[in-house]
Length: 132
Image 1 (cartoon, rainbow, N blue to C red):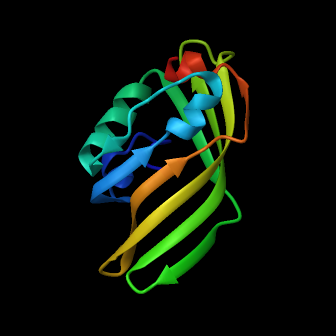
Image 2: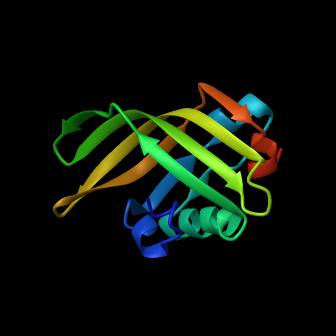
């Protein structure tokens, strides 16, 4: 939700300080080769800089499956992510992505420590949204 409404604090609140985001498996479907993004602040800054004022997004998470082991957990879920260029909403990419998350308990909250995003299918033009 933080990414969708461009709320830096809300977006950051989902991640541990040492979080990693790996979108390489998903992006490889259309020839993209992004780096692994490491660190909560870097993840938030990178993603918001890529999208704010340029791309509107909505993400829907369904059918989460969670396995808890003490203060760590693993969650998998399909996520449907719609991306529209602000300047031309007819340019879009709709992605169905399996997410694989490693979670860490911090106090009474669960935070994302590692996020791996793959891609099952897409429509539209992901290169217009994410680059090649």
